[in-house]
Length: 301
Image (tube, rainbow, N blue to C red; front, side, top):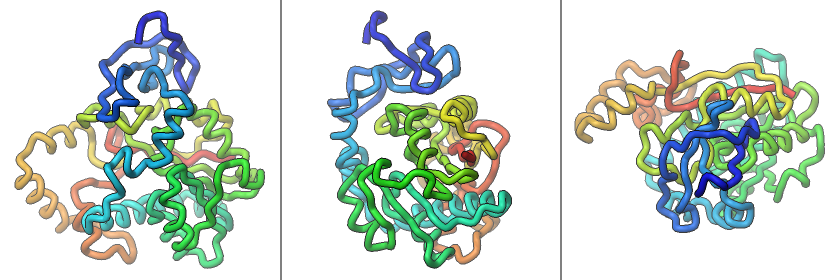
């Protein structure tokens, strides 16, 4: 990237920025990029943003490209189920407080479908539509009760009560446009749930596969610029300072501390002990005052 390249912030469209360092990737097609911070709104993003064709090809086989194949290790499955319980509880509480009855849900990037399974179990007869760019995931999602569609254009306008974006927005090239497309599918008063990592480049060695690195102000700006009304937003999970300290500890000590935290861990209804064990130490349900592992937001149309 050179100083002459037209770099535009994907949230506020500002064109002044600071280069934070190289975009750290293991995939050749995503190399030769920088990680920059918008001077106007603080959004951190990969620059230049990959073109649409490259990004579509990358995400068409996302689990293989980004994770070397979809992991089916028992511990990974337990963690996905446990974190889905936490996220679904957050959304259900928000919907209940707003008096919103969930009859139709659209989830974009449903992955292995754990959030969907919780929703369908909780609300028999719920209409649950899923969109996923990784076509290899669609058959499994359908088998679990989802209704796969190819893109937003197939979803009738103003037909959904809830759109779920769990660890999806950080992978988009145009987050504001993406959120607007989500909003078109919502009924008046419907909600979007967004869950994203919070500035995870600060404690990870690799930036890929994320293109965007949100903090609270930049996520608030993205939702507002998309015409959505913010209802709730917060930091959740272990604080950044604690994550960095934990990473420096020997593996055996990290495991011992995590098992120790199980004794005082909370549990959601019906969360099995094995799931509590793998999630112990992440403080996944804990709302924090400052930057933490995750950002969660609810915005209304």
